Length: 439
Image (cartoon, rainbow, N blue to C red; front, side):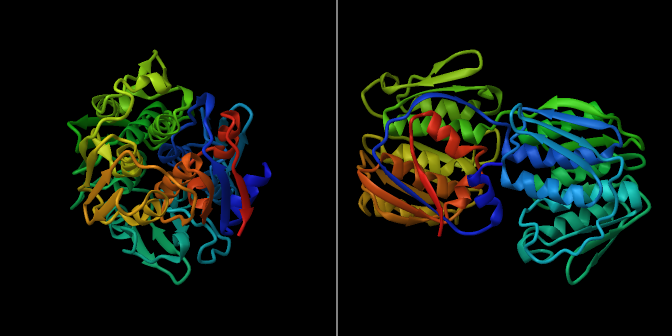
């Protein structure tokens, strides 16, 4: 593990300093998707056989925390950072009996580790991520999943406790579409006794990846449309080997950064089938992306009229543009030659980073209200001290800083670093330098 990874895992506030503009040139191979990787780790706990995951983002801090939890509960987890491979054997996995302090496992997907513990011992204990309580992050939906499959849920002072003699098939009817709830339901139902029906499921490309692994391990899963799933549970799941899908959000990040910086980047391992609509919107903005079978080459000549053209788009659910992509389309709007509008119907309050971007490009270049962001390009970025507001927003201000004139300092940059596997090394491979220090 390199020094940057150790800094990120420490949980301490980090600051990034960069001087711009810097023009990137080189090749980037996309890592396995962050939003699939930890889910697949959890699914690997459903068998005593070995599960091997290739194209795995071994350096993500959320992966590190989840692997640590699994090891403490008896699983064998090996991360090969050279070859991007994760190998998991859960034959010794069982109930987590160690002390769980608030914040000791600051990840949101600890609930996915319940099924593996129930399978082995009939009781599961999971920490509250970052000290949050049931309901604060949608835990009510996960409680509904466990109770619908025959388990008892008890909220303890330091953890959530789930008790049950295995899972019993049932009907899970989500009141709202939920990614996390769908993932949890799929994993638990795969080892439930009988056929479980999941209604109002939300199937994303990353959940398709999870379904593929569960099928390879032996679960029978039928999908109807994009919201109804039937799972034929198996008491004994088998091992499997599977590549993790490439990260579609990382792909968009590098495409937009190349356009902003007027650099030349070839992006390999692009998951075209998972980002058809996002790419259409970029091309409709006057960008002629040079696409190969598995790659995209972005360079200044891709701008057919010499600049990105103004656009309007709405963020919502897959297969459209998801809210995690919103900040990057805002950046695209800022370099467009005219006024662009980005609407966010899924998370309309997600506008905090716009004030930070305004520090670099001016209030006249960007305005934000709940659910709507308006940009007036072509904006010119100037170095400034800015703060991170969320994971994707943090990456957006880093990108702006790398394209800005002068020095930019980004506080709490660990938010961006947590979302990208080996981000600093990938920037270095493009000839781009960024200095990360403890705040």
